[in-house]
Amino acid sequence: MEFSQIAAIAGKEFWDRIRNRWVLAVALVFTAFALSIAYFGAAQQGSVGFRSIEVTIASLVSLVIYLIPLIALVLGFDAIVGERERGSLDLLLSMPITRVELLLGKYLGLAGALAFSTVAGFGLVGVVLSAQLDLNALFHYFGFMLSSVLLGCAFLSLAVMLSVFAADRTRASGLAIAMWFFFVLIFDLLLLGVLVVTAGQWGGEALPYMLLLNPADVFRILNIFSLEDVRTLYGLATVFPPALAQPWLLGLVMAGWIVVPLAIAAWRFRLGAGRA
Amino acid sequence: MADISPAPSNPPQTGTKPVIVARGVRKHYGSIHAVDGVDLEVQEGELFGLIGHNGAGKSTMFKMMLGLIPVTGGEIRIDGAPVGGAGGDFRTVRRKIGYLPENVVLYDNLTGLETLQFFAKLKGVPARDNVTLLERVGLIHAAKRRVREYSKGMRQRLGFAQALLGKPRILFLDEPTTGLDPEAIRGFYAILRQLKSEGVTMVITSHILAEIQERVDRLAIMAAGKVQATGTVQALREQMDLPLWFSVRVDPADFEAVRAALGHLPVGAIEARDDHVAVQCQRDTKMAVITALATLDGKVRDLTVREPSLEDVFFGFSD
Ligand SMILES: Nc1ncnc2c1ncn2[C@@H]1O[C@H](COP(=O)(O)OP(=O)(O)O)[C@@H](O)[C@H]1O
Ligand SMILES: [Mg+2]
Image (cartoon, rainbow over all chains, first blue to last red; front, side):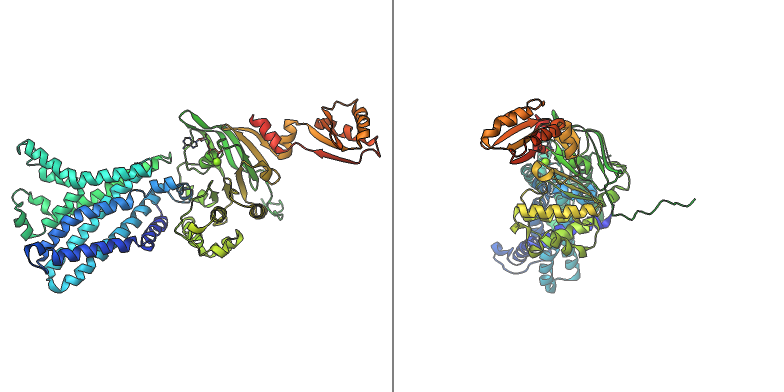
């Protein structure tokens, strides 16, 4: 593995997103949402202005959990299949670069762009809010930003995997949308369905662990269970095994959600070369 | 023991060291036999042409030689090393190779110069040559313009500049002149001649014979996934033993005299046209025909011989 080759690809992907203002646009979207949630989130309750950081983060989490997977999937679904369909993949692969290096370069460049937008967008709001936050609240907000980056990286990894498997861009985009629906909307309903149908007989114990099979849920747990207030607010503390409330463990699971799809993508992409 | 053989002082010439060797190469896509048992040998410093109709299997052959797609069967070696084989020298081989794909697709959002910078990074060559390369292919005026605004011919030139990055020793050029105007085509072949004098081995594909036949050292004619013939243009013509045509310009009153003079020779058709007689004959009767026509001195105003073109050879093989 040669780092310079990975860096060359990653650099191009990253600067492409800077130059076409993708990074700027996404950062602005995050800033706008975060600011409006922080200051106007309680408007329907008749109060405008900054509330507690816990409530702000909880609202942000329920927004980001839809938004970031979507953005990551859109960003990554044509990483490989796009080059293949346009006809530029052959030339790239004729360079002194391995397929794994190309794939990693693509991933890292895109992940860099997504992470940069996330940190810039939410970071700006963090700076604005910092005057009203104590150290502990800042720490929580930082945790939220970091987990958002991880969430993006996990779904980007899934997207890049799709882009290796899909035969063409159209199919890749269809799969990306299907994946978003599945993880963001359907998965939790399925779990709930199992719980209801079996009247809690089956899956009651295993359910919290099943949540780890969905990076979006891992993100949710990461943010909710680091916050005492919200824990009591949601009343989930009794259901939840304390082991799963360990941020480092959840972080590890998230890392798995980044590494495993990428590894599968690399395996599949190498097969295409017919090399062992 | 001391090596007493003289050091080579001449510029590199076409040697007899095979740089590219293909043996029984096949590529099947289901029932489509894109390449179906190809043997090729390209010597060091050679400018080698691969000719054939669309769908003959030329591009597929290129992709296998570059290791972009696996072979269904057979073996390809570049500089002695099997293509697509495991081993650490894959990068070394790749750095020696330049590739211009058919209908090259580059990145619309990059400028010409940025395009070269990107590929130079991947090839691990210093960026300082990029401007020189753009000059060489005649794109220096458009260096700062985005590829999106480039014409087909300009893209092709940029693709060619990309292939020349890092002074490759082997060049694979797949239909390199599509989209170029005649002037640019001449410029392109001038660069190839220069590269040849530097000892670069080149394989070039085309379906335009007239363009390639006088410019390559040797060529292989491909049809339906197979190599139908290999050799120099001259050798292919002789191998085919296609008839020559004489055009004997005489006064119409002397048409019969020409017929009479050639009567005893094993010539083919003798046809009277407006102001000349067209005579067809095999190569081995060529001199006899000229001698016979010389006896008609004074009557023959002009004499031209038309050799069979490679086009004839090509269609002769392909049909
Ligand atoms: N990926 C592929 N899948 C199926 N058939 C292919 C593929 N690539 C090439 N072919 C077929 O192989 C044959 C040779 O194609 P190609 O090598 O591009 O010919 P040429 O370059 O001589 O025009 C054609 O019939 C083409 O349709
Ligand atoms: Mg072709």
